[in-house]
Image (tube, rainbow, N blue to C red):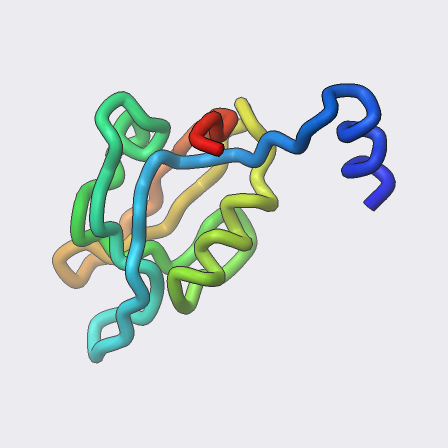
Length: 106
């Protein structure tokens, strides 16, 4: 909370990290997590190799069971710092590395 207050005082706003994807919750026999619905061109996700229909099951040390937990996990990342992202792709677990960027969409 102290960091948030200091950032607001210094910058006048809070900038959250983004991977540049939209997700939807999925739970089936293969995986439960946040299924990638769209990957923005040039985004950290695209640069890191995340593909549409990948199911994100872990970001950093945080398990991702649905799209809400995906948002929470991304917000805990540090902008500009590499982060491991575990996805299920065609039934196989794959670990990719992404570097979150500042979310300038808001």
